Amino acid sequence: PTSSARVVVDLDVTGPTISRHLYGHFAEHLGRCIYGGFWVGEDSPVPNEGGLRLDVVEALRALDVPNLRWPGGCFADAYHWRDGVGPKPDRPVMVNTLWGDVEENNHFGTHEFMALCELLGADPYVNGNVGSGTVQEMSEWVEYLTRDGDSPMVRLRKANGRDAPWNVPFWGIGNEAWGCGGNMRPETYADLACRYATFLHDHDGNQLYRIAAGAADDDLAWTEALMKAVSCLGCTRTPRNVFQGISFHYYTFAGDGIAKSPATEFSDEQYHRTMAKAADIDRVIAAHSAVMDAYDPLRRVGLVCDEWGTWWEAEPGTNPRFLQQQNTLRDALVASLHFDIFHQHAARLRMANIAQTVNVLQAMILTEESGDGLVLTPTYHVFEMNKGHQDATSVPVHLVDGPDAVAVGDDRFDPLSVSASTKDGTALLSLSNLALDTDTTVRLDLRGRGATVTRARILTGDKPQSHNTVSAPDAVTPAELAVALRPGALGSTELTVVLPPHSFATVE
Ligand code: AHR
View 1 (tube, rainbow, N blue to C red):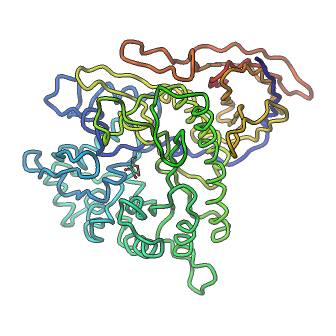
View 2: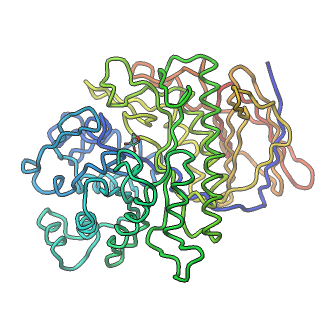
View 3: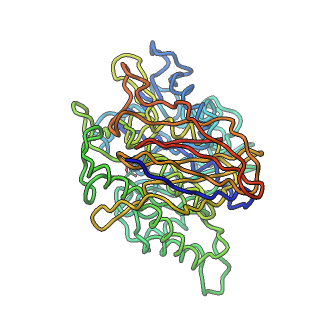
C-alpha cells in the first residue's frame, strides 16, 4: 500500500533554538555500561587510553555528544565520590545492590569520568547523592571538581594528580527521589533540593546549572511542588534561584504499564503500542510545561528529560538486572519520534539524556562480552543523522495532509512525523514513516527559500525487527535517499521523497 502527504516547512520563520543538550547521554554504574562498555582498564588488550575504550570513544565522537550524565540513575544515590578517587588499589570495594548485587571496585571514578568527557568533548553532568549522602559530601564534591586556588578539596584533588579545576556545567540533586532516591513525598524532596542546592557553590569561573530530581512520566504534582519551591509565586520574597532545572523521566514500553517484552521479537500490535507510547511524551512534556508556565511564565526554569528510551526484557542469558537489550529499527523510530517532539518543545525543554549510552537499555553501542567486537545500533544512526539539529533554529512544520492516525486501543499516533531546523544557511529535515507496511510519498513545500539538496539519507531495514550484530553490523545503516526537487510558488522549493515503511530519513 501507498499513501501521500503534504507538508509545509516555513524556512524563513524562526522558532526557538534546539539546545544541543537535547542530544545528551547517560552512563550509569549499571551492568556493562561503565565496566566493559566505556572502561576496560589500563591493562586490557582492548585498545584504550588510560583505561577508556578507544573504539567506543571514537564512535561516540561522531555523534557530537553534548553532555554525559553520571554516575546514575539510582546508583547516584548510593554513590560516595570519595570511594572513587586516589590510587586504584586503595579504593574500597562496594556492592552495587541496585544493579545485580555485583562488586563495584570504584576503578572508574571522578577523574576517569572527567577524562572520558574530555575525550568525547562532552560537558559533564554529575549527579550527586541526596538519598544516602549529606549536604557536606555533595558540596565538597563540587569544590573538589571546580575550585581553583587553595582549599582542602583542592589540595586533595592536586594530591590525586589533577592541578587545574574542571569545568562542570550541570549538576543533578539526587535522582528519582520518589523511588530509589529515597521514597520521598514531593514536598519533602522540594525542601531538600533547595537545601542541597544552597551549598552547591559556583566556584571561581564555574557556573552550575542545578537540576532538581523530577517526576516519573506525568506526575504533575511532583513538578508543581518543585515549581512552588523555586518560584515562590504569590509570596513577597523574590524567586529563589536555587535550582535552574527540573527533570522528569519517561520510558517507552510495548505493553500495559511497565510490563516488559523482548527487544527483537514483537507483534505488529506491540509495535503500534510502542509508537503510541513514544508519541505520548508530547502530552507529558506539554503538561509539565503548562504547570511550569503557571509559576514561571518567563521560562527561567528549564525542563530536563534526563532519562528516556525503550525498556525491554534483558537479552536471554544475561543478568536481568544488567538491563542489556538488543536495539532494532523500532528503537530507532522511537528515538526519531522523540527528537521531533523534543524540537517542538525546545522553548522549555533544555536537555534530554538517552538511557543509556553503551550496553544498557536503548544503547548507541553494544560491546561483546568476550572479544572486542562492537556494534553500532540503529539508534546510534538516528543520533548521527540528526546531529545537525544541535543548536539550530527550529522552524515550523505543518502537516497539511497525510495518512490517518493509527488507533491503538484508546491511544493513537500519526504515522508520519517531521521536524526541521536551520543553521548556518543549511536546513535539516527529519522525516519518520512509522507505518508498518505503507510507502508514503511526502511532498514538502519549503517556503521562503530556493533550496538545493546537499545530502539525503534513509535508515530502514527489511522489517521493524531488523537489528545489527557483530556478524551483520550493517543490517540497519544509513543509505542514500533519492529526492526530487523543483521550484515551487513564490520562490519556494518543492521537494518530494518516498519513504518506505518503518523508515527514518534526513534531508539537508
Ligand atoms: O536507567 C535505569 C534506571 O531507570 C535508572 O537508574 C533510574 O533512574 C531509572 O529508574
